[in-house]
Length: 138
Image (cartoon, rainbow, N blue to C red):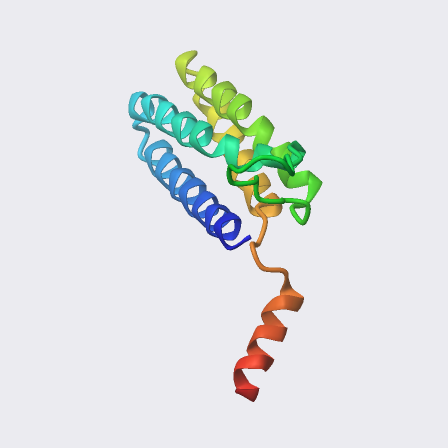
């Protein structure tokens, strides 16, 4: 479970960093660079896709290999968002290729807003409070 939490934190950090980078390029009107940067984002997304797809995999009790990490606590909205994000980035990239910059700016705004709303927090708030209380007691 700790490995999954680390992966979620890394995913959040990496995607946020990419969103900041692409926003900067767009604000500076460096559109060709922004278009190329989309490829970097898509590569980053594909490297994490398998981590979150283990949710649908049930471990084989007879297997000696490492079982997939359960991800049942991830919100369904996040799973859907994580699966559709590559298509959304590609649509944004297409707008840049077509030189539809105002539309691309708007699309990027929608992408960052949706990311802010849907990214999971790897530790539920109740666990954070419990951990703080436990640390104070010890």
